[in-house]
Length: 178
Image 1 (cartoon, rainbow, N blue to C red):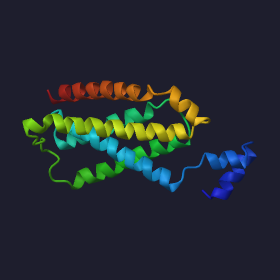
Image 2 (cartoon, one colour):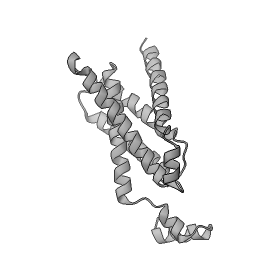
Image 3 (tube, one colour):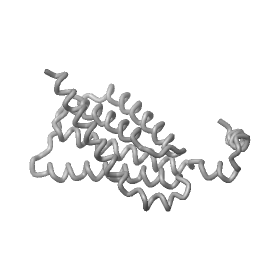
């Protein structure tokens, strides 16, 4: 939609032009969010693959975990809406990629002595991706700096949701295999 028209509609609904401008994501913001989703997805995929799934199954499980984590975000603002859109866009692109990759049925070949390092890398990626998304969302909450200090527990909430959903999906897939 045309930005001038959107601004006009916002003013029509009682919002000031300054409020409207403050709520708009820049291309740089979108790039940061897209990158954070990629990092988060990469970490989730690696974690699932290290858990013993095939690459294709790890990708699918990571898609589910990513979607669940993003839609569990309790804040609803411009950034959250974009994060949700970008998540679906990332999932769409990965599903296309899955159709063209020949090694989706392979298991990870992780040397035992490197497993801890690879697991830590996956956890770091998950943590970093969620933290970047959380910070960007809080930047767009009115008084974001005030709320940022008051909501440090949001990341553990996301982590718990990710772990719970992950275990549920893993058990569900194991039941389907039997």
